[in-house]
Length: 191
Length: 442
Image 1 (cartoon, rainbow over the protein chains, first blue to last red):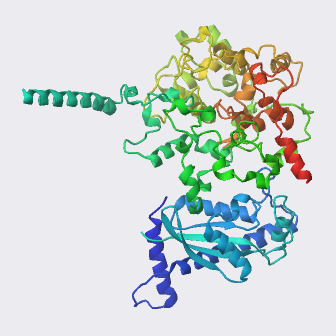
Image 2 (image 1 turned 135 degrees about the horizontal axis):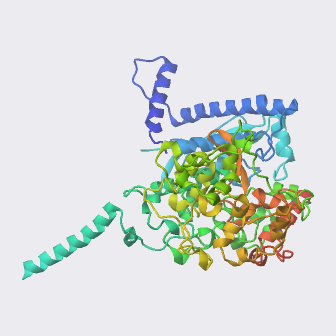
Image 3 (image 1 turned 90 degrees about the vertical axis):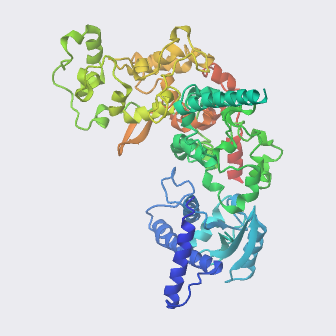
């Protein structure tokens, strides 16, 4: 793990705050864990929507190439959820300064169902409170984490149709704009 | 008297420490440090502790790196179903407390023969339960199935499930026992490796010094691809202008056959000669091997020429005779007069099209597409272990060239058929295709 990323991230976060606030002469205070996860999520959500709309949905509609869960065998595009997971795994191989995953109360892959109490409560919270995120702290093993759960909505028709048609999907009535699941981001707390 | 005892104790201690220390420093007789025999996969490397223990101060991460150095590419190619990245998320902390699957050593402990099971697994064979205890909720067909059957019934592998995943089973469910066109991959044409190659207009002349020439060697060379593509005697015996080498070094072969050599060094035939090993080992011989070998093969050292011959580079002989010259286990002996061998002989007689016959190499050293020096080439995978165990690894690269998936799955799961080299119909039935079909229907 590139643990050196942590101080770099702290410096970047501090510098970012200074730049954003324009208070270049004030004492740097850094971002709070919530600000950090909010910004990370903004990047993830935007990239995810672009891939889904501009690549998967468009090329499928134009008949160029389809997405497939078995994209290597089928010579197809990785599904947006797979794309997201590959990114999360690539990040995890480089740093343990933060981690993220895509989960759902109606997961196609059952390993993506909530496991920790924070995940279970958070995923239910974002369903019950549209437009809101869930933030908490939890202890996993010996480590405490700041954990944030963000709603993940069907941003394109292909999202809803794939989830509805997949044979492993426990729910088949999703519509465009529905919350399919949540993005869970964790930042370790303490030293 | 008291001081004398102390002095004797101290000098004995120093002598013992010095003896061990010297061996550690000089890298000699390192077996004195060996806490127990290595597994079947690594036993050839007992003298090469540094192959895994790359740093004397190394802990789990260092050993993990050593595992990945040798096995990482193979796992990637197998689309490893349980890569390390699946377990690094903190949400798995409770699971890792039971089984820290981030590390190969969690399941593959070395020097522990008393608890090493097939596939060199050192966990109880129901280890899947740690993460999949509730599988029956999602797959009612799995209700009452014991967790020690996940990997032993021909249904799942921990790492390589390329031929076992549900949608693949459904796609192959209707395939017949024998495909209409049953052919293994043909050898790549010479032009594949030598794009500018043209068949020489005249018979090439050997360029060895006259005192080195002998009729048998020249005749063999003239019949070989080496003569066809212009690799003359000096190409192997005087590479890059060095003094004449009666027995060319393995590195000379490797210079032109890098892809093949890479597989050879990764497999059991050539792992002792792997240039990456810090300790120089002698070539593998049948005697230290853990299988049954012919008496005549004793002392036979494995190199490229031990199977291919020195001059003729006979690919036909290398595909069967070379193997059976050493291997004498039940499966190998049963190849004689097996259905696969009868096809092989018919192909050699010209009665069947190329690729119809099945040699030892067809299955254990199959032709694959691989990238060598930035170019994609079809070449023989010389790591015989790459698709050997679990034997479902052989399905996509070998069996399915000729057979349908349901038959191939059943055949590979039948221990008697493995022993008798596939004479007869499978007595075992792997239910995974039926279960996948049933689920798809629902």
